[in-house]
Image (cartoon, rainbow, N blue to C red; front, side):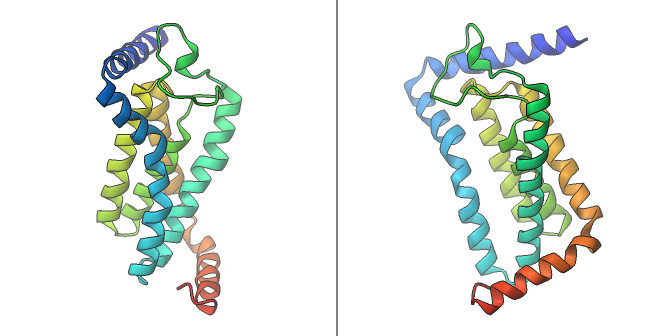
Length: 191
């Protein structure tokens, strides 16, 4: 079973990677999507914060879930499993430089799926869809660029949803912290 999963993983990775590597246009699009699109996320969250005062708590919850998924859980799992990045394997084109650290799970995908699920849980469906679309685009580009295997992306998505669910379960416990942060932001004219 594990050999079948690894064969599937390698098959998808090499076909996407070879396709992108042979097209200058797709190399540029993939590089922008895989490497730079993630920088739009803080900007989107900041704009949402200032446009929707009712959504400020939802933005805090989503950001907390995303950071917890990325900086704590994905980081910890990555250090334990320590799966090398695909570009370190034979036959995978390294389309742009990336640190040769762990590949599994995708911390970008965990972060984005946690944001998406958290916004969904708090009733902000359009924001949830936006982050879901960004997660899929960035995840696919990171596979095509040889930074992640498909299973890295799939597990990152599952991890993000699980962490957002955990944050939702702990909502009553964490809620005073969100209120405190919003009060501070109001005092310094940021909310």
